[in-house]
Image (cartoon, rainbow, N blue to C red):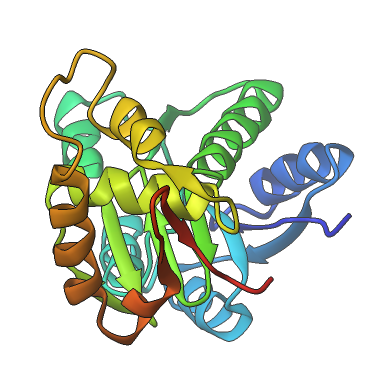
Amino acid sequence: MRMLKVLVVDDESRMRKLIKDYLVRSNFEVLEAGDGEEALELFFEQKDIALVILDVMMPKLDGWETLKEIRNFSKVPVIMLTARADEKDALKGYSLGVDEYVNKPFSPKILVAHVEAILRRLNQQEEEKIECCGITIDKQAYQVTIDGQPIELSNKEFALLDYLVENRGVVLSREKILNHVWDYDYYGDARTIDTHVKKLRSKMGEKGDLIKTIWGVGYKLEAAE
C-alpha cells in the first residue's frame, strides 16, 4: 500500500523531527520544510502531498501567507500549529481554509490522530464519487461532470442519473425507478420518468445515448467497464 505524504512546515528542526518520528511510526512518508518559501517549493514540486502541517510563525513567509498561496491552487487538508492560544488567530485560520487548529505544546500522538481522522474523512468523501464512461457523480458536492465539464441537473435528474450509474448494465423497470427516485409514496403517472429521462439525455449531450430504453420495461445505462 502506498504511503501517504505529509508535509511538515516549521522553522524549529526539533519540532519537525518530533512530528516526523511519530508520523513515520504511523506509516506516513514525511517531507520537511523550514519556512514558507521552502514549503511552497516542495508542495508544487511533489504534487501528491496528502496533508500539510503548517506552523504560523516562520521566517521569509509565515504560515498565513503560505496557506493563502496553497489555497489558491489546492484544497489539500491543512493542520495549523501555533504557540498563541488566541481566538482571533484561530478564526483567521478557519476563514483561510484550515482544517484543524492545534496549539503548542501538544501531544504528538494526538496530532497524528488528527492527521489520520482528517484523511479518513477525506477518503470517505472520495468514496462518495462514482465514475463511469466520463461521467463523474460527486454526491458530497451534489455535482455531475461529463468529461470534466459540469452540467446542471434538477434534484430528480441527479437522483435518476445516480441510480442508473450505480446500476449500470442492469435493466431497471419504471416501477423500480419510481420507487427509488420518487419514493414509495409517489402515486403519480410513471410516464413522468420518460419526461425526466428525455431531459437528462438532452443535458448529457452525446453521453445521453448511454441511457437505453428497454421497451415495455424501463431503462438501463449501457456502459462497458
